[in-house]
Structure formats: structure tokens, C-alpha cells
Length: 325
Image (cartoon, rainbow, N blue to C red; front, side, top):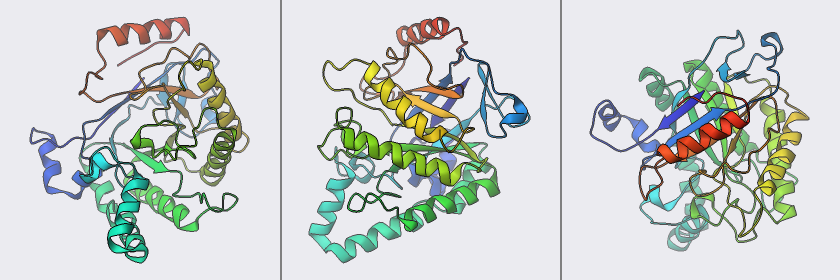
């Protein structure tokens, strides 16, 4: 089963409709997000899971009807980076620091609040639904619900943003994929993941905080059927010479935390690297309701071609599951 998500600035139909709506604010780069389900374990009974979930090699709803997700990436809202803000290869933390330097802490915080309140509104979700899309992928900085300064406390302001988004999406029947774009510490050294330099894969503190954060998210939203899945880590990067199994171990720990409070939402596991193109570490499944994801940007040689599709097909065969693009 394939999810495909594209958001791009282009005058070519049918995307030209976006040029006249607020939806264009959602992203300023070409992105295709593709996820596919691989499973070798028995599927959940339909009656046991009312969420979107894996059944065999397809995604189905609570009635067992197959669902194909086509959607839009809401990047630049709850997760910033310089390529969307005209600031080059710059992280959210660096952007915020520069704003503070220019206008002062109070005005910088006022600006951040205004972005959160107005960059994406219910009207954007309505337009997405009207154009025939049925899912949004929502990149999150961990600092939306989490305070690095007070890691044992969560921000009500962050929960309120997510609560409001889910209510809009329920109203307009648009599913949501919650994507942890920046985990505590940053799951890669690339600016889009807003790293703080402390590392991730070899930093037990960052991993433990990530598990706790995902557990809290799952506990809060375990009953929200509009959520299509939890995208555990965006484009994680392994340290030099680190075995791929290390990433699988981290995913398993996050999954265990989520499953302690939420048995039903689908887990989405991205491959390693800048475009999540390396899926070689997935030699086994960690959950009976999981999908794997790879990304393609159609630039800098990162497009997914025949070679990569053959590799993914071989992995699918090894896991005794179908693969559809």
C-alpha cells in the first residue's frame, strides 16, 4: 500500500489552484512522501481496531475497507527550517536566535505565536479536502508539546495547537499523520531536524526523552480515529559505522512506549539517511501494525528510481509482503 504526499510550488495544473489559496503557505519545496506497508504477522481483526490500520498488505479503515491516502505536507508551521523561510540551510533554532537578535525576545515570541495561530488555519484544511486530498502529514518540533528547560512538564499551548488541528481535520474528514520531525537532540545533523549538537542515536538521554514524548502523544490521542499514524522519526541519521540494527532498536523502544498506552494507531518507520532511502536495516518487523517510509525530493539525485524500487521489492519479498507504488 502506498501513501503519496506532494506539496510543491508550481504553475502547472492541477497545482495552480494552490496559488490562490492559503494552502501554498504549507510548503515551499518539492516533496514526495511515500510509505508502504510490510508485514509478516497476522492482521488485527477489523472489529479490534477502528483506526486506519494494516490488514495484510493494505491499509484499511475500521470497517475493513481499503484506504488510499493522498495528502499534503504542512511543513513550515509547527516545524521551521531555512529553505522554507528564505534563510538557506538554517535550522529552526538558528532562525529563532536571529529573530531574537533583530527584534528582541518579546517580539520574537509574539511572532512565533502568530505563526502558530495563522500559518495554517481551518480554511487550509477545508481547501485540502475540497481538492480531493484525505491526509495531512504534520511535521512537529519536539518543542511544540515538550519543554527542554522543564522536560518533566508538557506545554498546554502545544497540546492546544494539536487538539485544534485534529478537530479541524475531523470536521473536514482529512486524516492526520503526526511526524516527529525534530526529536530531542535532533535525530540527524541536518538542519531540517533542528539538531542541538548533543546527538541522538548514541545519546541515551535524547532517546529516553523521545520515548516519553511519543508515549505522552499516544496517551493523549489514542482515541482519535482521524489520526492515520505516528511517524516516529523523520529521516533519522545513523552515526558513522553504526549498524542499522541500532535504529531498529530505537524504533522498538519508541514502539513499546506507544503500545503501553495505544494499541491501535499505525506506526510509520522511516528509513535512514537524508531522504530515508536506506531501508536495509529492516530485516524484521517490530509491530503488527506498522508501515515503512521512504522519501523522494526529485532533486540532488534523491529521486527514487528503478534500482531503489528493485531493492524495496526484494525487501518486500524477504518479508513475505506485497509492495505497491
